[in-house]
Amino acid sequence: MSRNIPVPVKRQLRQESFFGCAACGSPILEYHHIIPWAEDNHNDPEHMIALCPTHHRELGKMPRSKSYALKQNPHNQVHGFIKGCLGTEAHIDRFVVGSNTYINTPVIFSYFEQPIISYRIEDGQFLLSIYLPDRELWPSLRIVDNEMLVNRGHLWDFEFRTNYLKVHREDETFFEIDIRNDTARVAGTMLLGDVVVKFDDRSTNLDGGRIRDSIFESCGTGISLGDRGTKVHWPTYAMLIPQPYFERNIRR
Image (tube, rainbow, N blue to C red; front, side, top):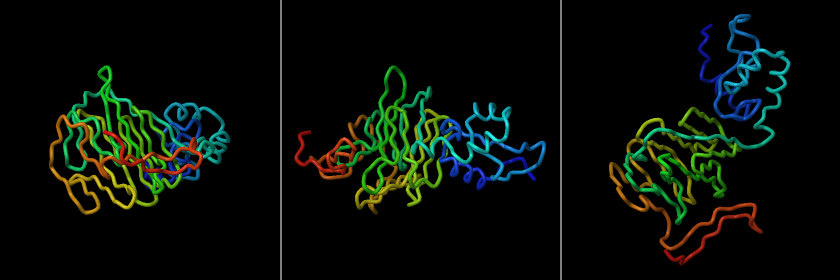
């Protein structure tokens, strides 16, 4: 038995902990052997648990019963969402999204006048914002100035490391963000209304129409999907009837 934990075992542990530390919900995870490796060389998920580095150290010194109790009632199961922060100290001066490069272009991609991928620089810090909607345009992933909130409903897998995020939903929607270097990279597939949008290393595909290997520099918005002059308003529970609506003939 190798001490390297198999990928399917890690995924199973992430899924059962609802993609966060069982104790506190942090999305930065390690994998704890409740029955220690030194006692029994195993990678049995029944006797392992997903924890953040801090709680990994703490629970290793506590009775096993506490780990088993947390395994049965993880933090994110109670709260229903995942929180984290992407904060970066890297000097990022460009985005690569769907094989296209964006330089000094604060809105990379928008949908009916609402930013889907955008960023800004404040006091030298790179701040990323992303809105990844589900089929009803509610947020399944929302990042505002690097602060992340993920709805765990319909998630199949979720991987988070310092300045790296990868999200998979059951409907095969996924999103990957890498801001570990001086060039930020984003890839993903999503459904916006009836349009399938795909960003990969070959092109940006908008329901069959492709844009590839282009450079957008000093533009207000790189790519905009939707009728000009019409703005979508995302659904919120502050609405009398929570649902998206489209405001037409807005002034630009």
